[in-house]
Amino acid sequence: MNLTQFLIITAQAGMLVNMMLIAAAYMVLAERKVSAWIQNRLGPNRVGWWGMLQSFADVFKLYLKEDIVPAAADYKFHALAPVISIAVAITVYAVIPWSGPLIEIDGVQYGLAMAPDMNVALLTILAMTSVGVYGVALAGWSSNSKYSLMGGLRSAAQMISYELSMGLSIIGVVLICGSLNLVEIIQYQTANGWNVFYQPLAFVIFFVTALAETNRAPFDLPEAEPELVGGYHTEYSGMKFGLLYLAEYGNMLASSAIMATLFLGGWDPVPFIDEAALLGLDPYSLPMVLIQHGVFVGKAATLVFVFIWIRWSLPRFRYDQLMNLGWKILLPLSLANITITGIVLLLLN
Image (cartoon, rainbow, N blue to C red):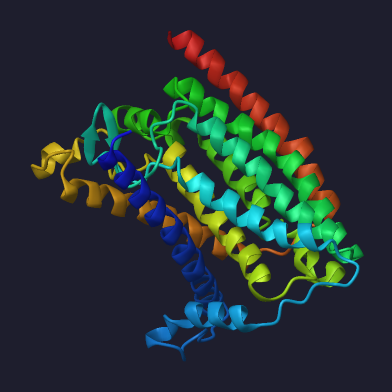
C-alpha cells in the first residue's frame, strides 16, 4: 500500500464514522418530527431553526450527565457493551457501496465507501449483524438487573428467530445475481431491473426481519416499557445510554441501505438506462458519483421513514406472536421462496 492509498483509506474511514454518527443523531430528530406529525404535534422546535440543532443539544446533555453504574454490576462488561454495539453498527457501513467508483489506483477502485467491492460482502454483513446482539445481551447481563437481563435474553431469542429468515431471503437475490459482491449485485440490477420486481416476497421478508433485528416496533420487546421498564438499557445513563441509542438508529440506517442495495438498485436511479451516457457524464466523474450518492441516500432515507412510520402506527406484538411469526410464517416462506426461485432459474436456463 502506497501513501496515496493510505491517505484515501484514512479519509474514507473518517468520513464513514462521522457520517454514521451524524446520520444516527439526525434520525433521532427525524423520529421525533415524524411522530409529532403523525400525532398532530409540533415536535422539537426550540434549538436552532425548526429544531435542527436539537440532536446536538441531546448529545451534550447526555455527555454532561453522570455515569451511574449499579453497585452489583460487572463494570467492565457494563462499559464494553455499548462499545460493541456502536462498533458493529459502524463496521457494517464499510462494505456498503454508497456510490459508484470515483478513481482507480493500481487496479483498486475507490469511491464513497471503504470496502464496497468485497467478494463476500453479504456474508460480512450477516456476520456483523449477528455479532451485534452481543452488545445488547452483555448490556442486559452485566447490569445485574432482572429487567435488563430479560431484555437481553429477548434480543438474543429474536436474533436467532429472525436471522435465519433474513439470511434465507437473501439467497434468492444471490441465485439471480450470481454474486455475493454488492457492487456486482447493483450492476446486475442496472442491466436487468431491480430485484424487488423479481423477489417481492424476499423484500417483504427482509424488511420484516430487519425490523426485528433492529429491535424496532412492533418488535421492540427487548426494551418494552410496560413490563421491562426500559429493557436491556434500564441501568444505563449518560453517554453509555447514548451509544446504545445511536447504535439502534445506526443499525436502522444500515438495514435500509442494505435493502436499497439488494432490492432497489442501489445507486441506480432508473433501471435499464445508462444515466451517465444520458447525462453526458463520465461514469468516474465527481458529478456522476454525487448523483449516485444522492440517489442511494434518498432510497435509504425513504426506507428509514417507513421504519419510523411503522413504529408510530402499529402496536407492539406479544412475545408468543413474535416467535410464531419468525418460526412458523417467515421461515417457511423464505424456504419456499428459495425453492421457487431455484426451479424458475433451472427452467429458464
